[in-house]
Image 1 (cartoon, rainbow over the protein chains, first blue to last red):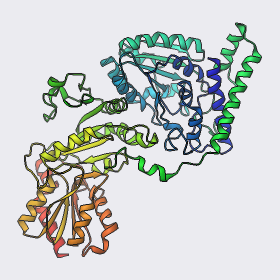
Image 2 (image 1 turned 60 degrees about the vertical axis):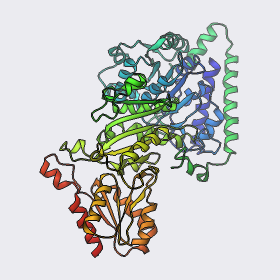
Image 3 (image 1 turned 45 degrees about the vertical axis):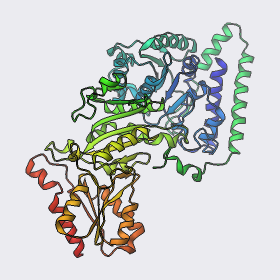
Image 4 (image 1 turned 90 degrees about the vertical axis):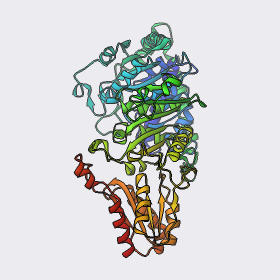
Length: 299
Length: 302
């Protein structure tokens, strides 16, 4: 799990550096601080399960096994990108992670609809932030999910921020689980910075979901970087709640060597840097190839 | 629904047949898993339909009144319409949406609109506005079988009409000439196609009438072709104001056929106001046979 989290952390750090160097234009929202949620939940992903996420989705893509090279190429606007340069960071669409959306709350009902079409036992997992909880579509989706006993696991990454404003300025209802309780949906609030806690809670709730009904997991995390990369209002800083450091401390307590963990981080950094070097050699996306992509079938 | 088990219907009151009887009896034949009543949650329901489509189903959403498209618009415009493109072609959204627009019922501004220009202005949505029963049936079948989002826009005034149109066994995907003539071309959609045919017969002009039934992507090819023969064009539309889709039709024709024209293209949309409720007000608002005949005569004299 440390390795999986390290791969996300070093990928996002590399993305931050590459953006600062001018290689990655566009809006980038990094998952730094959310690694434990991504790895804890998606380590339990089944072959037929599907994942939906938000504008802050890189970590979910990586934890679900999507190709980091294709991901990076998409961020860099290359023809070899996951979406041939047409989607970008906020609209990634992969194999098991079906959709990242730039509309806050937008993937909630889509995840629900997809769950209705999945084979029995398979589930939809949808990640969203605490900012999405105040959208109308969040409430509509929770109502429908319970009404239709849909196999959806709602995972809220509550970092206390919606863009540039804190949660207490958005709502009088502090606990996201309170909304789930209204619909009689099983829900838990956990420390999203500890991957072992996340995995255990996700396991409990997924068991319930697979049996036939939605559940909500609220993970309290820290958004370790600004809302978007390049925001002059805020810069990243070391955080005492850093999920990487917390897992490292637990592993070291259990006998793991610090040097080994450092080596894992270094390996992940090198892999990310190598991926970037490959990607920058790829040709940029071309309109010639993409103009026909508006429709599957021309009318 | 019988031949393709992936087809599903969603919408408010669909198990009861809906307010207009569109879905009457479907739940009896196909069950509540495939004919799903929804609460008044257009925003989420359209998103559910997108998810069903991504999961391999063929959802058919009954969006009762096109005025409610506003509530469903984020999922239709920002998701359904864009997913095939944003995914680089890796995903398709085979979603059909049925909706009804237009007035004549005294139901007022929020239940009488046409929002053609708004919907057709978003790349990634196909839209057909059928003007006869055969074409409406064909449009529904085509929309349900299509791999992309298709809106079937039914004219309120034609919901229970049994009036056929010439050549309406053809494809609902192409705009087409329904009456040949030589002095002017009248482009119309929905109930206005029938009105234009009546007006042409009444004033005795040799008017060519084109049924512009594919509104997105807008199919004006037969209009352009007609104008090369008649040199005059009148565009009718029930939509309100100068922003009605009639403006785009006129501009597209002008782009390629300016030098064929003997007079400026005339547009006759509805007035730029919300649809009023009182019968006297709505009657004054709505285009009628006299309005159309008058516009045709003015164009002939221009």
